[in-house]
Each structure stands twice: as C-alpha cells, then as structure tokens.
Image 1 (cartoon, rainbow, N blue to C red):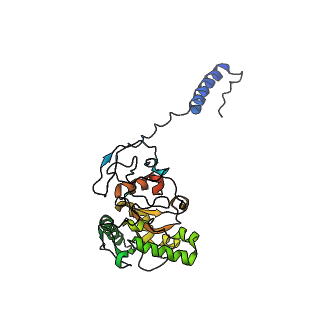
Image 2: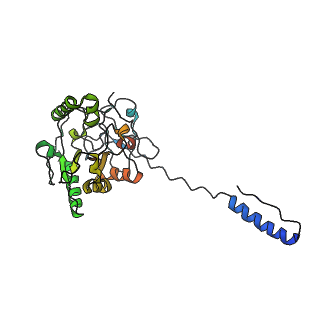
Length: 292
C-alpha cells in the first residue's frame, strides 16, 4: 500500500513545497501502468475434409480461443466420417477422422474408420532400419519427412533408427492378444492399442531407436541422444512426440519418448511454439484415458 503524509508545522513554506513534490511522486508510483494490449486471437481459417494430405477441400470454420485450434462437437459425440477441425493454424486444413489425413486423431475414444484401414501408399524409407518387413514401412508422406529428419540428425552426429513403423490390423490383433494373455486386459490396455485403435496402422507414426538398443521402448529412452534430439527438433520436419510425459490421462498411454507422429511442419511447429503437449488439447478434443 502507498500512503501520503502531510508535512510538519515547522518550515511550513519549504515543507509545503516538499509535500507537493512527494504527493506527485506517490501518485505516480501508486498508479498502475496502462495494461498491455491483449494479443490478437489467431484467425479462424477454414477446415477441410481432405482425404489425403495433398488434396484438402475447404468448408466452413468456427472461431476458437487459444491455446490451440478447437474441433467441432465431435469431441462430445462420436466423430462422423467427415468430421473436420473447426479451426487450426493457417495453411492447409485436414480431417480429424479420415485415416489418410495427417491430422487423423486415433485414441481410445476414436477408432479408425474403417477399422481395418490400410494405407494405399506404403513405402520403405531410405533411412537406417532396425525393423524388417511391414514394420519398416510408412506412408509416402511420413517416409519423405523421416528421411529429411534422419539426415538432419545424422548431420548433428545423432544416430537414429526406425524401430517400428506400419502395423496392420491383423498384426495389431495378434500384438494386443499377446499382451492380454501375458499381462491381462487391464494392463494390456495401458501398453498396447486394441485392433483398430492404433496410430501405427495409419502409416503416420513410427517408433525410433538409437542403434544401440539402450533403453529401447522404455521411459529411460528419453535420455538417449536420439530421443532428446527428436523431442527438440522433430517439429522442423512435422513430427511430435505423441505420448508425452505425464499426459496419460489425456492420451490414454504412458510416456513413449520413442513414438513420433507426423502432423505436418506447420502444425507441429505451432504446437511447439504454443507449448501444447497433446493432439487432443491442440484440436480441442476430449481426453481419452480409457476405452468406453
């Protein structure tokens, strides 16, 4: 608090002068400065029902508050086959439900439609592989971005490998069944996606390693150079760490520093700059901690 006190009775003329000066200074110190102008809200660009990353179609969009773009009411109700985000960063807009879209959201509340979806453009990227067969495949867009990212990492002295890429519906069925048989369904649901609920099936995601096998598929992998580099620089190539630390209540999965997801350079960089950790938050969708 600030207080103004009157001058004493002696040397009254000089005191009045001092009091006047003190009062002016006190008034200045106690007066709040003009509040800063609020930051302009991001524009509400249009969304599309793009069936693929390269051919989006415009549709009406709605305004959303920061920190990230919101989606339509598909967060509260099952997503229709043509669901799109209501707004997002400037540039191309993509569907949140079409498996061929780089923005498709797959989690425990949002299964793939169709459940047995298979990308039409699976290719093997020209990068260092630690997997073979279908697990060494990605869709063509993700593969091209991965090639650029791996080359940049190598230029920085970082060894990065593709540990696991595409996983078919049939493979995911077998993988999940194995988890259930060995750990029980409750624990299986925290470690493995049910068939039709896996990002690996879309071709937009893959797991990385560092070539040594150190901390492979364990939380301590976050301290390995390849994981640290990917977390810090992956956005430059369109990738985010899909299941970050302490966000399992939102994503439904515990920390997976090895699991990268392609969403495009613009969106990944926007997430990085805004400090948004999960795709659910970024697109304004409900958390998906468990299956319905």
